[in-house]
Image 1 (cartoon, rainbow, N blue to C red):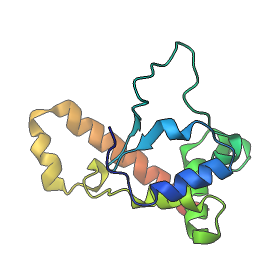
Image 2: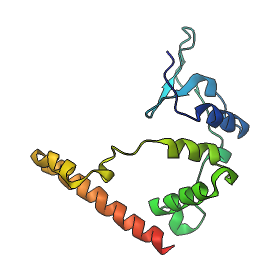
Image 3: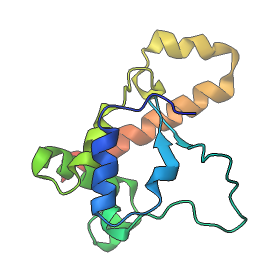
Amino acid sequence: GDFPEPEGAKEYFRWLEFKGCTGLEGIQMRAGGGVSIRETSGRRMRQGETLFSISTSAMLMPYATEEDMVSPVGMAWRILREVWLGQDSDFAPLMNIICADDMQHHPLLWEDEEVRWLDVSLEAQEEIEKVRKSADESIERLLER
């Protein structure tokens, strides 16, 4: 069945079609994250059948420096540049979807007290600290640009 879609999903799908993507009528974005396959009046997919295709012109890639092509920081920098361009960005519909995500509950943004709720799991605490340290290092590299 159909699910609630995030704000901007229709504009994003129109943009994907303009960029040459096909088969989009078979998928649906879900509010809160994720993608669903739409019900297709009982038709079953065959093994190996393509559900949809994404054109390379719709793929946001880091700028083509050797370091950036393999670096999460390079991708973060590209996204920041597109966000800063706002509606002048060729990827504005994608950026609108990305920026609409509610990140308030992401562990990177948890208060220390919330992280302490995980005292029973040393592994969870270590993982959050590792992710936070990596994020801090990435932010430092972005600020150097």
